[in-house]
Image 1 (spheres, helix red, strand yellow):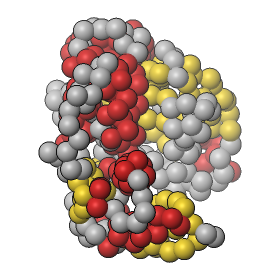
Image 2 (cartoon, one colour):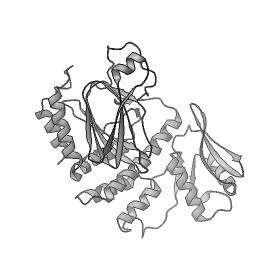
Image 3 (spheres, rainbow, N blue to C red):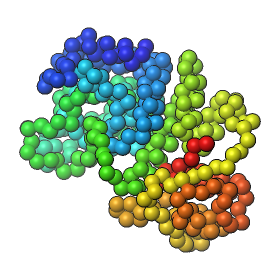
Image 4 (tube, one colour):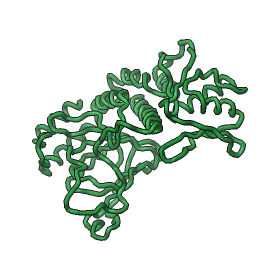
Length: 345
């Protein structure tokens, strides 16, 4: 099964076109849920979706909300992956049109709220708590308030198929409900951003690519190796090593170690360092003040001071009495945080 097959299923169920200000029939959404349930347990389908997702990650788009890897041009229906770290949750939020969510890997749990009673009492009133193991597919038809969460100690991956009208304000309540998170199921591009926002985008890209690599490594379907190679091009150094192990050392084992350059992810990013309880901390300037990014032994004081003032540097130029392994470890931490990005060679 491929993503095109799922699109054909939605078209056969007579979902309204992108220009129509209409909602589908409930029976159509139920039929679509069944189609999604069949799709997410098919590794060929998941592989196809991941190929689209990697194109999105390579594109490096900045935005708020679930960023779709595919939008059906005729129906406006959006497909996006949700990445859930251990304990991760967007908090309670409201959907105003139909959505279908399937758990692709690991698990989630979903707490729902009594929407009518919550608005009447002006506070969130819990209703049900549903377990959602891998393969579970749920749907929303009427407006709904819920709070998904990853209760496990590992990352989870979910597929979100959403209406083009989800996120439209409803007229049944005048005031927003206290306690609802500022969650956006709609992707909205942002043009002018603080330099630190680009750091967060780079950090999330590293995390997401790493999770995709883990999943690809467990797949026994044609094309998985090709996508691993695609991941290699945008992955962090640590994830590159994982890919190389999966490829039995075919990528970097025999390659000479060239000079390794790191550049600040955004040239406007402001960094500083300070002593902290016998350690040295590296801080980044954000819209809301300084954020501590990493803390390591003060034996690396010279290196961290160097990093705070340099916008681009060769890893082996990190000063101080550091071994090559220690220089590499510091460089990889900087890369994983998203503060610095490897310069392509």
